[in-house]
Image (cartoon, rainbow, N blue to C red):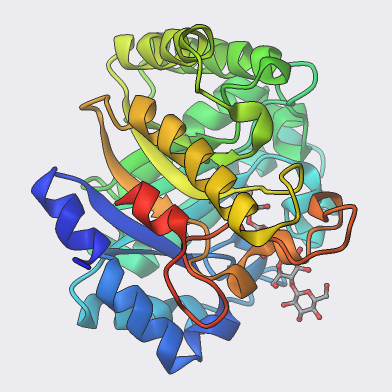
Length: 333
Ligand code: G3I
């Protein structure tokens, strides 16, 4: 079959994948990714915690190595991410930071140092950055709090992060990335994201697109017109603000699908097809990235909350552990 990146190119779409350190060391996985993808994102190696595990002690090596490989393959690179808003994913030393007598000034200085150091290091290599990741609480739709939001205010802090990124990486596409989906339970999450995007746009923040993580599952079933309408309403509002769209972290959680592998894979493919038919119908959506290409590489295998009740291995990606194409690959194609 024709590689996904070739099919994508014909439609003006980039096809990418998130690669983690372990699979980066696997030549067969690398070859699969090089065959199918023209874009790379590092699964963890580009995060603040990975780049600066201790204050001032930078560890750019693992990300540099991945990006050099991507470049050698002619792939585009997405940076993920400059600021992960949820406190538990910020480096511990940031959460413990002593902001002193002028906390707003110190918070601004810390944010500035981080964004400028990272953007200056990677230079023009990064085509698109997730500047802010997951700022909206999925249950309440409110903005999450962290050491920066407490000292600068959440919207001004995010605005600052985007401005700094734009200053130091003027050619990069700047993205707000989150996991709100089309499911009914995500209504508040979607509303919170829309409010945030409106607030940023009305301040003139240099934000260019919304990253739709697209970790979909059975509750994101878009097989009915009514469900499609809800999702379109959201995407219409986002694109109506002049923002682009990207599918940044695609996979299909199969925990509610039958254990029988043929049935399960068919269910996964059907969910994907319906979701992608609607989402990729937007001309603003020009990037499609998988969050892992083979089932053994998926974060869902290790994420406790994702586990199937019957304990069967999850099958969320387009290729199985032997890198054989599954029905999901056909659905994406
Ligand atoms: O590398 C360390 C290892 O040295 C240590 O012994 C081990 C003990 O826990 O942890 C290893 O780090 C883990 C890392 O993945 C690498 O495998 C972390 O604990 C674990 O928390 C981390 O999980 C990642 C998670 O983000 C948190 O950063 C997942 O791999 C990654 O797939 C996931 O990706 C996120 C996106 O960034 C944002 N959107 C949601 C998506 C899925 O949760």
